[in-house]
Structures are given as C-alpha cells and as structure tokens.
Image (cartoon, rainbow, N blue to C red; front, side, top):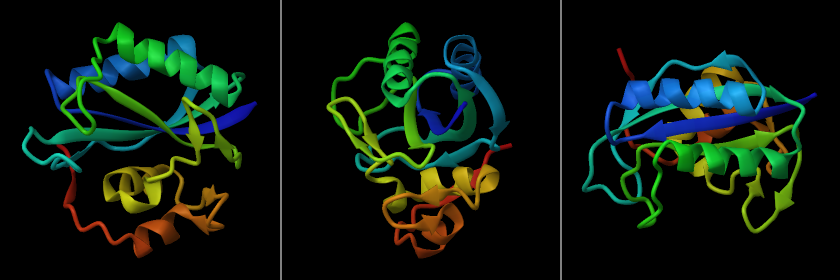
Length: 160
C-alpha cells in the first residue's frame, strides 16, 4: 500500500462543493482517503488578480504507483471541467501530489516531491495539520519544519 499526500484547491464556482466532488472522485478512482485537513482560504499565489482559493490536504492510501495516480488525477480534473489556459490562472479544481511515500521522481507529468511545496504556505499549512512529521525526501525535513522555515508570508486562514 502506498501513501500519497495530495493538495486540492480551486477558486472558481462553489469552491466547497468542488473540493467535496474531488474527494469523492479520488475515493472512487484512486484509493482511500484516510485523513483530510480543514479547508483553508488563501489569496491567489503567483497571479494575484483573481478570487481567493480554498485548499485542502488529503492523505491517500492507494494501490496505484505514482505514475498511475497522476494519470487518474488528471482525468478527474478534466472530468470536473479543469481547463489549463494560463499558468497560475483561476481554476475549478487543482489536485497536486505533494509527496508519494518517500519517492523522488522527475517525470514529464510528475515531479516528486512537489518541487514548490516548501515555498508555498498554502500547501504546507494544511499538510502540517494531517502529517506534520511526514518527511520531505530531498530536504530531509518534516513538513512542520518546512512550514516553520517557509518564507512565504501569504495569509492562509482556516475556512469556516
């Protein structure tokens, strides 16, 4: 059994419903979600002239390998209406694999661990809620250590 940590997010449509739909599809097509963080709201990162995002971290147990998982995730995003028009642009759903076991990969469709997670508070804060001691296999730091060292000051707030 493999353990993957995912980050779901979106800033278009009904954000809560979209994250719930993503969780349901991930469960149907990818494996078992064993932990889900709270929802967090944050201003857009990278391209700031757009609505705020809702994000949620998920711990997934899966029989799939990393390549199989990313292919299914991309199908889920497409099924939910994700259109990739501009980098960091608004989106109905985004599903990233942050960590997969302690594997390191550099595939065309997938880089593991996620190459920017250590620079993004909106990814680290929800992940730290469910997996503070998960290890980043490149930096050899835990998620909580990465969060404490993160230079990103973008506010990330629990969503109620």
